[in-house]
Length: 135
Image 1 (cartoon, rainbow, N blue to C red):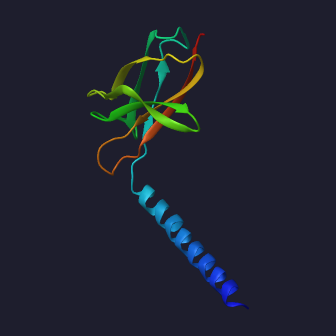
Image 2 (cartoon, rainbow, N blue to C red; image 1 turned 135 degrees about the vertical axis):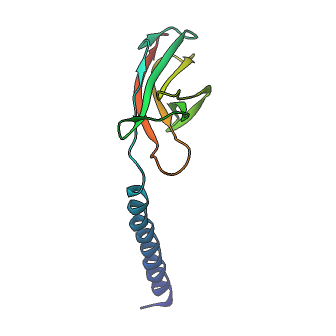
């Protein structure tokens, strides 16, 4: 075996070992966190450009309300999720949230809410919807 082939083989073994360590470690950490759920309902599924609509829902963890959790609205653009400017609220004492959204680009818009409770005891939750912005 040449030195170059030996180096490539060694690098591949090291990369696989590093990836295995990350994969093995992740489920143990996630298992310690409580499950969570966020719901999402849009007031309208078809809006005119610049028209305001409302997204609302509730965050729970193992059936109980999660108060004070930030809920951020994101849109799928250019192959990734981006935060909508100003579209972040916190859940109230009963776990409910309500956020007003205005979209200007026409077409079907994939939206999601991400509820990310403080600390590391409850998992982040996501919910998805599609809103059509009429052109």
